[in-house]
Length: 457
Image 1 (cartoon, one colour):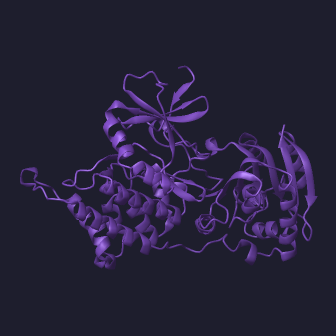
Image 2 (cartoon, rainbow, N blue to C red):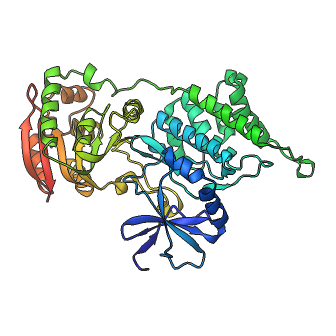
Image 3 (cartoon, helix red, strand yellow):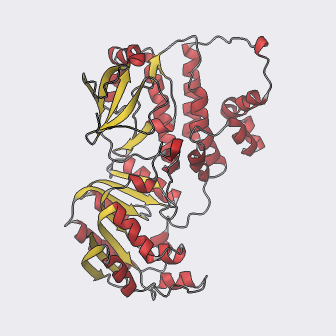
């Protein structure tokens, strides 16, 4: 079919693949996977995972939409509004994705199946919680064999989490450079010497690292017997390790931004009232809050928009917002650790396997509150460039202009030369008016800052 497009990230697994047809994503199950797919359903595993909200739901269709000779069945999964990647997650998101994967493994073993894949790319966040999306990752369990995905789980989950705990959460972003995971040998060199006396770390990081660096004599290799109980013991140990891990962060610049800056409480209150008032006149499917901080305005937007993507360059801010969201306070907010001045690029085979952040955005509304001066003055981005990025990702724009006389701008310019002759309100309005119509503008009380509501022409 001419309007059928195979998803660029779905080509490695002979069990099936994902494709797009008439604006929806489908998954084809190949004959190669037929027995395991039937067991997934007949064993009761699919029903239990679905009931627990751990696996994405699907509708089975007896339609060979691709016309492939390998076709067994077509699945129409529940559609996810926005796909995120592990290197855009905060510490607790990656931690919860790891625990979900192990939880699913435990449940699978009860039904005579096992996970053959254990990558965080099989997890997405929906309604504030992680959910497993790869229906073809299950296979019949052989209790005489060790877990085939153990190494993948260690390198994709345990190593980034442990390094984030002992060193810095910046190691989560290493998954962008190493999507197949970080080797245990890499972690062993970076972890402090005392960590090897922690039994779980010795077993899952230092011991595998030592084995992988030795020259092995294949003729003398011995087969070690395995069992289901041994598998469960490993899972229990991994769960215990993960639950004890806490992130190690350097000083966070933005998590106390509003509490510790020179901005007044009167300004914050007036801004909140104004933004809430304008948002109450809007509604839609997707809103994006750029520079969300701890998400106060993302929460406001979530009352009017079905899905809110809240991004910030500060991992601690995103982590705090995520913990609020997963407790049910605002489940339709997806917090992501993204720097809008250096957004996630496209990576993988042919640079299309995993799309860049900007290319995934298609919003009804973008909020950019107290952001423009950081882009133009803090990052030397021209006003025209800011306009260009917003016009490609949104229809409506709620943006705050911070004038040159603002104390925050003055504070920023104390540390560098003022080369920003074009940074003024007139140039701001002229630049944005080329691509947007200004629907509303209002000065925020107790400040010289101005809020604008714009619509793309």
